[in-house]
Length: 98
Image 1: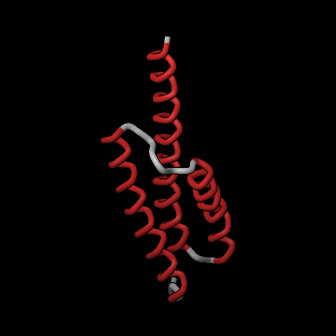
Image 2: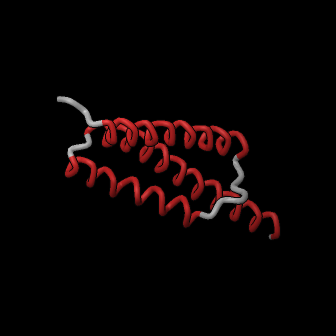
């Protein structure tokens, strides 16, 4: 199967995006505190990634689909971390006030 150059370029963006999200995952894991991040932004990009996993096969963009799996998986992990550490911090602050 021959891949078209738009699929190759888009897949590259998807893969590099996944790498950059992994940097955020690592940093959030180390800091264990959410600061300066809107959860709505993270939810939006995770949802968009999931849509792309449905959409790319319909376009015949197999490389973009593979890149999309990578970036969407990373975004989903990051979203889970954002929720977990936000809830954990709220509970910790609530217990400290008691």
